[in-house]
Image (cartoon, rainbow over all chains, first blue to last red; front, side):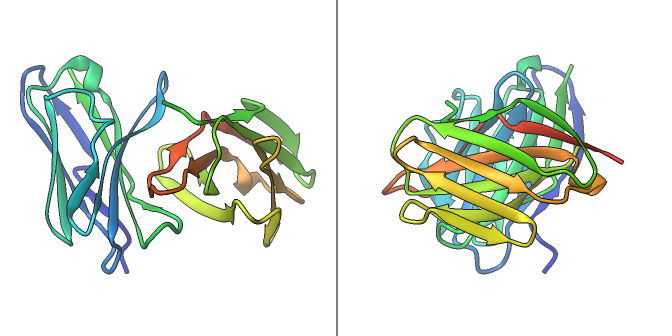
Amino acid sequence: DAGVIQSPRHEVTEMGQEVTLRCKPISGHDYLFWYRQTMMRGLELLIYFNNNVPIDDSGMPEDRFSAKMPNASFSTLKIQPSEPRDSAVYFCASSWTDYGYTFGSGTRLTVV
Amino acid sequence: SQQGEEDPQALSIQEGENATMNCSYKTSINNLQWYRQNSGRGLVHLILIRSNEREKHSGRLRVTLDTSKKSSSLLITASRAADTASYFCATTTSGTYKYIFGTGTRLKVLA
C-alpha cells in the first residue's frame, strides 16, 4: 500500500485565491482526518469523516474552509478565499476504527 | 484546543542514553497514543495504550499510563541518532474517534 497520499506537496498562492488540497486515504480505512500544523498552534484537528460522512467539523476555523469526501478513496479540503493566516502544513490521516492513524506527508501551504 | 502537554519541550541526550518524555492531559481518556515526527514529515504512529492498560512495550519503546495522575510517559532505551525527532502524545475520549494532540517534545540525540 502506498500509504496516505496528499497533493500537492507545496502550494503557494495569493491572498484571495481558492486553494484545494487533496487526500487519498488507505484502502479499507473507515476514518479520515484533516489536521493543520503551525508553530504557534501545534496540531489542530479540523474535521473528520467516518465512512465518508462528516462527523465533527468543530475545528474548521471559519466558513472559508470546507471539506468533502465524495467516496471512500478521496477527500478534499478547500479554502476560499485564502488568507495569509491560513499558511500552515495541512495533514490528512486515515485509520481503521480507533487504532493508530496513518498520516500523509502533508501539504505546505503558503498564502502571500 | 490541546488536551495533552508534553514535558520537557526539548531534550538533548547522547547516543546510547535513555530518553524519557512525559505527557499530561486534562480530562478522562479512552486511549492514548504516541507519535513521532521527523522534520518536514508526517507523523508516524508508535504505540497505542488503552485506559485500562498500565504499560506497553514495542521494541526499544516503553509506554506507561497513570490514569489517576492523568499522565503518560514514553521511554526510548539505547537511543540512536535516528531517534532525533519530535514526539507527540494524542488522546481520545470515550464516544469519539478524534485524537487531540499535545504540544510535543523535541528530542535530539547526539552521535
